[in-house]
Image 1: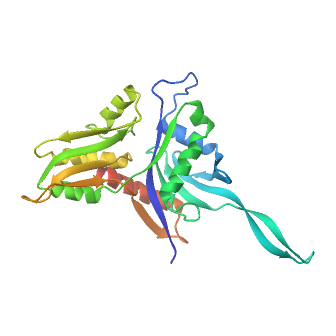
Image 2: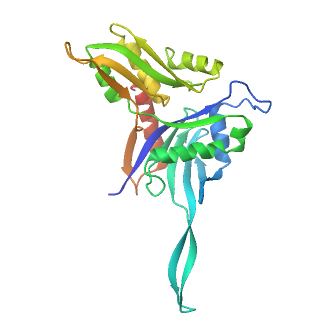
Image 3: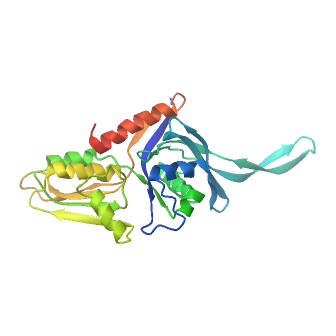
Amino acid sequence: MASIEYSLFRAKFIKPRQKSLLDENLTPGELFLQALEERPSAELRKGYTWHIGNVSYFSKNTGYFAVGRTTNSTVEKFDEISGNFIEEELEKSPYTHCVFDANIGFVGIAKKTSLTQTSKGVAARIEELLGTANSIKRNGINVEIVPIPDPEGFLKLLISAYRVFRFSATFRGPNPFDADKYFQKPLAVYLSAAGGEKGKAEIQGDDLNREVLESVTRSTAATGNEASARIVRIKAQKPITINLKGDPVKRRYDEEKHHPEAVLADLTELYHKVRHDS
């Protein structure tokens, strides 16, 4: 049975610190939807034109789109009429499936190795394509499509540790509506006010509060950021560093039977598990 693998990515539409005169005061969700509706195409690499198409909706803020690229290739063939071997130019357009929730701000991307080796590669092309949309350029928006990592392994080590005496996390600004109140939200405000693009903050203590660290870890993962901690797993052992980063959280489906709307419902549940453990 052939399977198809979807990975979860955070979609961010970051506004400039100083609004342009053409700013339309659109929400990130509205910017996402407007950019998709434009179905942007662009030559992102010489000879490779990428496209967003097949946009359809499950609700006002959720739906499906396809992303792929067009390339020309030369095929050698025999022409029965002329009795000669000839070369013929053929256009190929492999594509893959994507589902989205513009209100939450995430995209589920199906891996397809004929496009790129990883779903991260497809995410990078989506990021570039959306960045070429007129609505995005007109409002001076910076688009980021970043992996949402699975925090469970990191949290298991963090919560069970004998001591946690250092914790750090990256942040970008401004972050989505459900970022945590301790770390991501206030630091995103600070970053935006200072005109920064990204940052990293660290706290230290004799033994840091696990409940607070879990909340910040889940928010950090859900907003597509990274974290690390310095812990002592068992009394008398040497400290080690653990990291939250890397590949996005994934789900596999039967390629022939999977339905995008059902995939979106599953990925929405997966997102809430990452963010809230619910």
